[in-house]
Image (cartoon, rainbow, N blue to C red):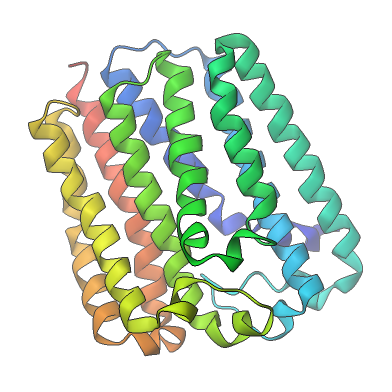
Length: 297
């Protein structure tokens, strides 16, 4: 059963931790005193939600036959766990459902502690988890935005709401940045799987508008996230320490240059996929560290 761990895609479970850390940093900057119990509940919710969506994705992609036609990379194409161990399919769907139930239970506990208004974000998050692989992948724009909404507007904004008991401008900025970044994470990872995805009826942007146009959309989403930081600092929504995130330009520049120059070669250029993962983690982490170092403002 240790092979079942592959269904959770453990290498990517750092992403909810980045979202929660960003929410924690901006909440502390606004003077929030965050109980350890709240922090642990939010971390549990974030990890269980990500495990659930990963397990659903692995199961449905195995059942549709998609995973038999993709060539997995360290950053895309699924884990291949069920292709190698098909007898674990029932365990995978059980894991997906049980972690979804854990996510819902943890979310309801936070709603009970912090108010029913939080339920609005929770409902959206649960719908994204269950519908992403089976339904949202058939609509280009929903497929693009759904991952970002799940990690940005639901997880990051929701965590900041729990930590601060309010939705201040800094929390919205962090949430929008994470929405743009995570949408781009999935967008670039779709490039290597275009042929396989077509066979199972998916209609994401690289299929519908082509790789060159998708590369430009990818570039503009990352640029929008990047320039939002100095705008937020100038507007007084984030402290000046957030500008530390701009040091990630050392990853962003070669990433954008490579994707725009050779969008059709991304399937064979694992370096670009790795740069994208590095930027999407490093940029908000540096921002959050800078915000924390700035202290309360």
